[in-house]
Length: 197
Ligand SMILES: [Zn+2]
Image 1 (tube, rainbow, N blue to C red):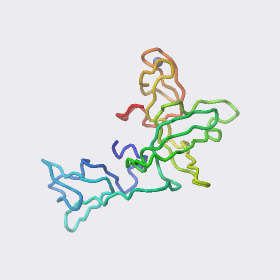
Image 2 (cartoon, helix red, strand yellow):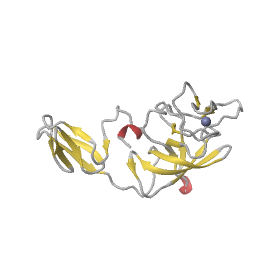
Image 3 (cartoon, helix red, strand yellow):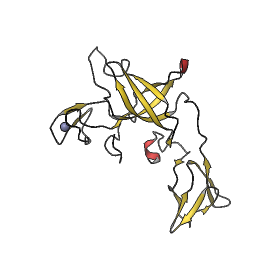
């Protein structure tokens, strides 16, 4: 996945890249630590944060430290392994845009999410790929929130026929295969990412 899936918006000056990601053109910057030149681009050899040294005209990558635990505020991407009425279990595989082999468990509590007035909404379903923010790590439980426009389901399958769901308007998506209307709490870039559940 690319950095556009981390949930770290462009407002952040700190860019996270993955191996092979484009860093700059050789006319702009020379490859520094953990970077290499290939054709007309300078690319990363490691996952990490981009550092540009304007005086040396050098771009480098500071390798991502492999986190052992999640922190409040971290943005994670994972797959829903269990979906109940008010909670969902998520197997987290990306932490702040970097693939994590630790596969942290997380829990989304949907009861407190938007929707209100006691109406029952479907926020996530089994096998959905979700982007979420860590809200609490109290007692070793990684509590996740999807209550931001950029958070929520980023890829999903139709719960009736299993076809990948295309991007829809608002909080809904209509399956092109069987016509089923699917409700989720979609992230604002749902359906634009090149990933499948
Ligand atoms: Zn369908």
